[in-house]
Length: 359
Image (cartoon, rainbow, N blue to C red; front, side, top):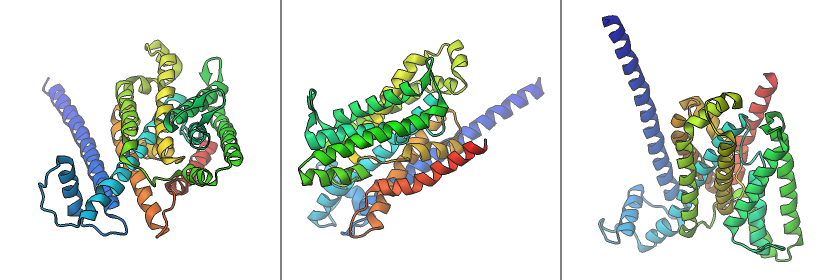
C-alpha cells in the first residue's frame, strides 16, 4: 500500500512538474512577445526611450497625466497613432494565421495544411482586391473589404475540400495539389482584375498590399481583427478534445461520438474567417500557419489544449519580428512583411516535402 501511494505521489508530482514547466514556458513566451512589441514600437526614425512607451500608453488610455511628460508632444502621436496599432495588428495577424493553420492541419491530418498553401489566402485576396479595385462584383453589388475577403476565403476553402474529397472523406494526398490549383485560379482572377482596372493609383496600392504589408494600419481595423481571433481561440479551446480524437482517424472519432461533419463545417468557417480578416488588413502573408504550428508541436506536443495558447503567442511574436525585419532591412524604405515570411517559410515547406517523400 505504501509503495502504491509512493508511486501515485511521484506521478502526481511529476505531472505537476510538467505543468509547471509548460506554464513557465508560456510565461516566457508572453514576456518575449511583450519585449518584441516594445522593441518594435521603439524602432523608427524618431528615437524613443523604452520606458516612455508604457508611460505614454498609460497616460493616453487613462486620459490623465499619471506620469510626468519627459517627452515631446510629437512622441505621443508617434507611439499611439502610428506604431502601437501596427504592432498590435501584427501580433493579432500572426496569432490568427497560426490558429488557422492548426485547425487546417488537424482537420486534414496533413502537416502541410496552411491557409496560404491551400489557396484560402488567395481566395481572400481575390475578394478583398475586388472590393478595393471595383468596389464589388457584377450581379452582387458593392461590399467592404473584410466581407469580400471572407466570402472569397470561404469559397476557396469549400472548393479545396470538395475537390480533394472522395465519398465524404478528405484525401490528404490530393489536398496540397488541389490547394495549389485553386490558389492559381484565384491568383489569375486577381491579376485579371488588376489588368482591367484603369486607375493606376488603385493598382499600385493593390499590388503592394497583395505582397503582404502592415503599412498604414490604424485603430479602426483592430476590432474586427481582435474579434475574429478571440472567436477562433474560443473554438479551439472548446473543441480541443474533438481535434485530438480526429487526429487518430475518422472511424475512431465517429465511434467516440464526434460529429465529424459539424466539426468540419465549423473549422472550415472559422479558418476562413481568421485568414480572411488577416488578409483584408495585411494582404497575403504566407507560411505563418505552416511554420509556427510545427515549431509549437515540437515544444508543447500535439495535444491541442496545451498547444493552442502558446502557439498563438509564438505566432504573434513571429509576425512582429517579421515586421521589424521588414522595416530595418531596406531602410529608409519599408519592405512588405510577406517577403520576410516567405523567405523563412518556403525552405521549411521544402523540408517537410522532402521528409514526406522519404517516408
